[in-house]
Image 1 (spheres, one colour):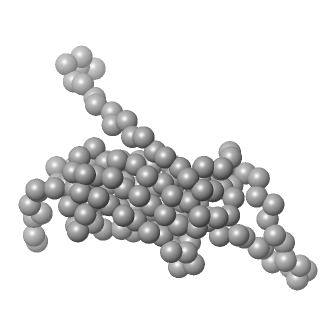
Image 2 (spheres, one colour):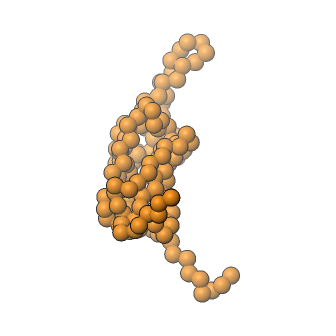
Length: 138
C-alpha cells in the first residue's frame, strides 16, 4: 500500500424527524451513501417499506448541496389465507407516519439537473450535476 495516497472520507450529518427518528433495529430507514464523479454526485437513501407507486416521496435539492427527502411510511395491513386482515404491531421497522431525512452533499449542485430513480429494493437513488460543470452531450 502506498503511504502517499490519502483517502478522504465525506462525513455527512444526517437528521431524522417524525417516524424516521423513532425507528428501531431492523431494516433502517434513511441510511445514506454518497458518491462523486468529476461532473456529479450520486446519493442513495434506504427507504424500506416505501413503495413509489403508493406513496409520494418529495426530494428537494438546494444549490448549496442540501438535500431534504420527505414522505410517509404507510400503515401496513396484511391479508392472510384465512381471510383475516392483520394490522402490524410495528416493533422492528420504522413506525407508520411522516418522515423527513436531510443531509448535505460535499459541494454545490445545479438543482435543475438531477435524475431520481426509486429502485424496487427500496433504495432511492439520485444523480445531481455539480454546479458550473458542463455536462457532455452524446
